[in-house]
Amino acid sequence: MKIIQVDNRKDLNRFLDFPKKLYYDILKFENYVMPLKLISKITIGNYKSKNKHLLLAVENDEVLGTLGIKVHNHNGEDKLNFGFFECMPGREDVAKNLLDHAQSLYPHLEMIGPYSFRMEDPYMGVLVEGQDAESYFMMKYNPDYYKNYFENNGFERAMDVLAYDVLGSTKLPEEMKAKALACEQNGFELRVMNSKKMKSEVKVIARIFNDALSENWGFEELIQEQVNDMYLMFKFFINPNLVFFARKNGEDVGCLIMLPNFNPIVSEGRGSIGIKMIWNILTKKNKLDSARGYALGIKKDFHGQGLGSFLVWNAWDRCTNNAGIKKGEISWILSNNDGMNNLTHQMQGKPNKKFRVYSKKPIC
Image (cartoon, rainbow, N blue to C red; front, side, top):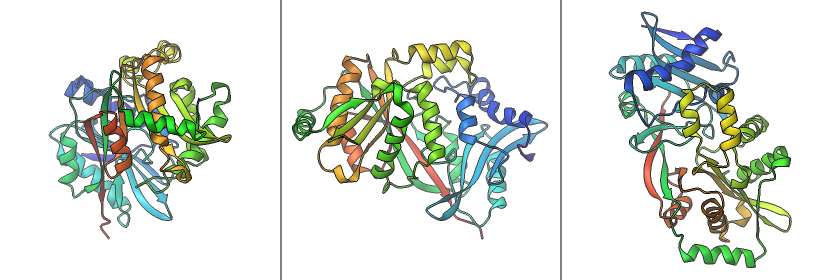
């Protein structure tokens, strides 16, 4: 077995195509939807960058596993973020070789992930519970043996993040409605995204989340690079009518984003994106009947005023009554975020998945 670092397009394609072979041909997982290679390329960025390494585990010229790592600075501290981990069943030796090789390159750094390569990027964490549940767009899906691969190689739980299943027929509690009405009486207004000003709207969203989530575990400020990526994603994958802002005195102080679940459309491509899929994404994104609660943030100065209920009540009403959303997933929520978990329980959300972020201490 050899560990090869990707340094050319041929090996990059082998790296990106490996999940297709693993999940469709070998594991034959019905709930798996392969990430679009376009999104993977965006999140990887420059794969030849000095602080990034894409690794292939190869035996007899056959790819048996993949791993991506990046030296990442957060709050002045370097860590080795890892992601894009995939591995054959029954080959813990492959997983060990990949992970050991990655750590040997930077033995002085803590490894943490899976991230691709920031916590806010798509496909974060290892799915440790919920393989039987339906997968949603840009949410990680993996076999249950990955948990053992990491834990048997010295990785420990750093944080669990949760997903909840919510039905469109759910009747939200009157207490939530009362809080929403109280916000209206206190001068808060609801608006949706202006699709003609999407670039400026994305900047507004980044400012809200940078303030609202700054004290959350692992959160990293959205800088210009991430704002650019967000804008590109929104152009393709956001229904502007499902992006809600709470506003007072001309200032946007909260935001809730519902992301249409494109998995029924992108599943047929098995990672590839063609003209037909692009057409379906652009023309059918307002007609999909399921969506993810992608992000909710309220500026800290406006906490404790019921704005979470205000946004959820109004958003859910418009999603189910105007946009035809019949079901949804609220994902993901940090396990220690009591406020968001309580809010989701008020929506009668049923826990359906658990994702885990792992870490491993430096070896020297």
